[in-house]
Image (cartoon, rainbow, N blue to C red; front, side, top):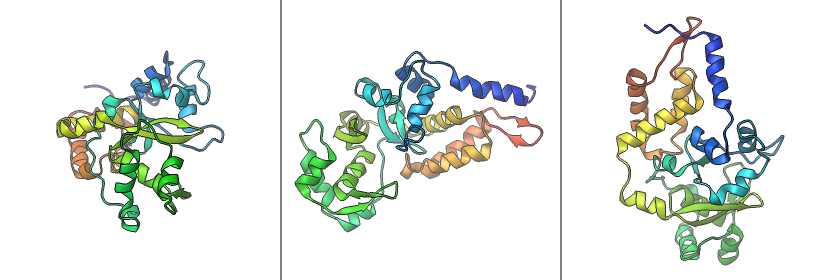
Length: 253
């Protein structure tokens, strides 16, 4: 029987997540998901994370290198960057109708038409073409309704983020996601992959905390959340190693 880990062993396991990586791509591959945050004080979350793992990394390197990386912007438990192999777990994604569509029922078709055939569009270009009003964005501020429409199309896999210009997301076609709509990964593979990614990324952590992250993953897998919860319970029973620390907290990892 394997003995329960000591606190020192858990600290060492957590420290291994900070092992140096040879490049931004290597760090992204090792993590599988990198949370993004636009707040720049003291620096954006993605830059702080990579500074701790990639020697010589400077703030903004991810944004500069992004067009040449195997990387996509998308949502799992929250918004961030991931390799395309991880994004394949999340699509095709069925997103419920939004308040934006209720307020502007013709807007999404108009935005689709405006970006069709374009390799890349800036939200300002679409706003200039369609001239829609303003709406509350995900951060509580105000955005153009056309910018929110681009965000909805991105979340549904119809568009991808091609790069950022001054922190603003530019959008373009997403043929790799169109291919997933036609031939997705098997659902059990998607669910198991998402559970194990979260456990590997955030572990070691209490089982309840991992369950909370599974709940947050309704952003990434909105139509599969009940199945994801079932996959989590199965993984806790069968796949994820767990132990007790100080006779108190079970920690799947």
